[in-house]
Length: 341
Image (cartoon, rainbow, N blue to C red; front, side, top):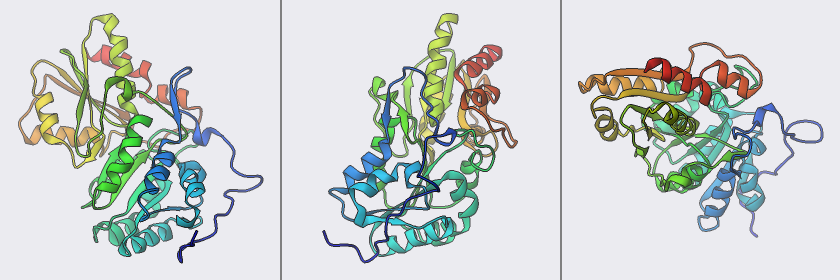
């Protein structure tokens, strides 16, 4: 195979004998829950078989963003940039200018905090066709504030030209990857990696960029959710059936652009408490986007509540403990809904 003139050697990442499973990449799946391994990496590697313009870049984290699957399948199209996120985004911008479709992967905190200006000026302002896929969104690691991207959506929502996607599960991620490639322009994906739960395939769900979809209907409560919180919302809906509370779940995978028409229609159906659930700070995320939308359009539901992470730096620890402490576990969310009703 002819080697790309842009090729860089794929070198081992981390220190010692190599990367090991740790709390950094703890699975979000409950015991016994169906999962799929590395859906992003496998979907990208498969798509690249017929798309020679797809390239992958990592800032020393391909193992922890599942891009190593792509690197193994297409080593001549994988670029290891080292621990230099600003260089990562600049290089992706350069490759996009040459007609490639670059997928730049790192952790969400590093993209949002360290590389913001480079994404803004080198990629978004020029509306370049760069796809940014970032692991550890929200509270998906127990490693504390240095790795918990609790404010990444708030940081990126104000950036013009940037599409923002928060996928729920492996089934959706597999559909998101080709949709990202089909879309012309920069995209930011909050990526679930490793052994990712499978949920939405049971509901016959199909991802469409920019579209919110009702996963289940209900007369008492409308949960507007995104990312892994749609999985939690569906679990809460089942739990509240025992209390004879009928819960609808509206999944919003595309946070920007927001599917305003669908949200307004569903929130405008009378008599239902509206709850927005997200794996993100209650400041600047989907909750405030929906609240602003409803206010601007004069849609006033009987009640409006948010399930999200508090406006503070979170603790380190085991994910199940942290999810319960900060209110995004199934049990914690169900308790709050019962209180609000």
